[in-house]
Amino acid sequence: MSKTIAVIPGDGIGPEIMTATLRVLDALDCSLSYDFVDAGMAALEKHGELLPQATLDKIAEHKVALKGPLTTPIGEGFTSINVTLRRHFDLYANVRPAVSFPGTKSRYENIDIITVRENTEGAYLSEGQTLSEDGETAISMIRNTRTGSTRIVRYAFELAVKKGRKKITAVHKANILKTSSGLFLNVAREIAKEYPRIEFNEMIVDNTCMQLVMNPQQFDVIVTTNLFGDILSDLCAGLVGGLGLAPGDNIGTTAAIFEAVHGSAPDIAGKGIANPCALLLAAADMLDHLDMVAKGDRLRQAIRDTMTSDRASVTPDLGGKGSTSSFADAIVKRLAA
Ligand code: NAI
Ligand code: MG
Image (cartoon, rainbow, N blue to C red; front, top):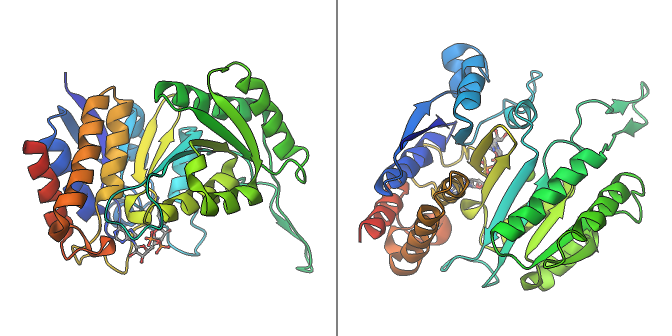
């Protein structure tokens, strides 16, 4: 049975890594059809707006989208399209796996951490941000809800069960942010009791940063609020060799959008040297989501094998001399073998 997904090629390096990713997906034989839609600068040029209604409609129709990075123009009152998409589809869970791959410049081996970040509330509110008239006092609001905390913590535990993970760390700052972080922590403690087979521990966010750098192998699944999750997941990406290997899955109850954590990389756009792996790993997560877990695993293994045995084909960010297309070709060849 064929499944159609919405595909947003995106801006900058987006079209280059998307072409590579779709070529690899085709080689995996997943019976996927692609419905191409625009967002970002590409949409602004073609349709006069950053996020056309037709794009929202297609994502709603297909329920799954694979998305290239989007450039948000600075100033001129533009809000981030990524934040808008997350809000529009209530994509409350931002799942960011950080896994060690061979042949990176990473300081560590054997890291396998999934950060589950709340994606809709916390400090990421458009309201409640004020600056006094004299410019002296700035106030930002944090809002966490019991409902929002419950669904993200439950998502993390269910993910841990599904993936056979052993331990969840709830990261918070409840000692200082007594109400907002306190509510999140209390909810986490309550839900943890429902999952006695999964080890639960809690850690204050500043200590977590230190522990991640000193002894990252102690972590398995991290669940946390929006801002802490944003920061910690980039830290985790740094532990495994950088942004070229970091996928980000945005999951809601009616739709899911899979993307790379990195942006449109204007400094290397058009040069054909962007690493396609972050988007490829997001595509592998998308296959898991579509109940094609074996295909997702095959794709991850092919990337791993290519990075081990075909160093000449990999992109410069991983120390290779290859290009986006030579990297994709090598992965396709592995899949065919
Ligand atoms: P960036 O992630 O685009 O680039 C940061 C650095 O990492 C650059 O040196 C770039 O060359 C390198 N890099 C990124 N992806 C790479 C890849 N696949 N292979 C090799 N090197 C790679 O971040 P920056 O420059 O801060 O943002 C550029 C634009 O992207 C901005 O307009 C920003 O708003 C947008 N952005 C979009 C995101 C999204 O759509 N999810 C996420 C982050 C930024
Ligand atoms: Mg971020």
